[in-house]
Image (cartoon, rainbow, N blue to C red; front, side, top):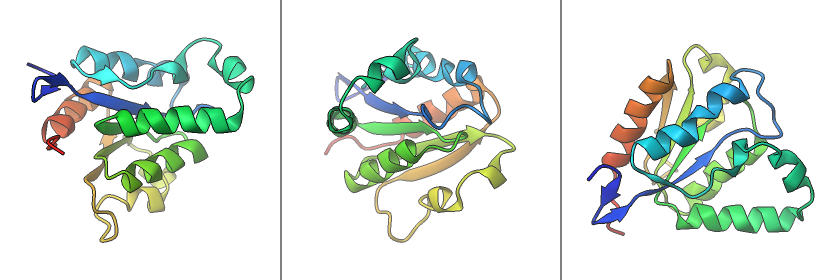
Length: 160
C-alpha cells in the first residue's frame, strides 16, 4: 500500500521557513506541501508550521519547549522532507539534527534558485562526512515535488 513499509505508515518530518519569511517562495505555495505529503499516503509528524496563527501561538512557548517538541517529532519520523528555498536557521538546524539521527533527508527548492541556496546545505548531499542518505532537488511545481518525494521515500530502507 502507498505510504507504507512493513505494514506501517511512513512518518515524514516536514520543515520549512517560518520566522525566516517567504521572500523567494510564498507561504501559500509552501502550504501545499503538507497536504501533498499526506495525499501521497504518508503521515506527517507535524503540520503546524503553516497553520493560521502559528507564529502568535509559538511566541507564547518557551524556546526549549519548542526545540524539545520538534526534536522528538524529528526522532519519531522515518524521513525528513524540507523546503529550503527561503533561508532559515531553524531548518538548517533541523537538517543537521536529522543527519545526526541518521535519518534520510530530501531537501527541495524551487527550480531556478540554485544560486540562492546555501552551498554548505546543498553540499550535504554527496558529502564524504554525511553517512545518511541526503538528496537535494530543484522542483518546478508541486506535482514535480510530489513525484520526487514519493520516489525518495519509497527508495529508503526503514528496517532499522
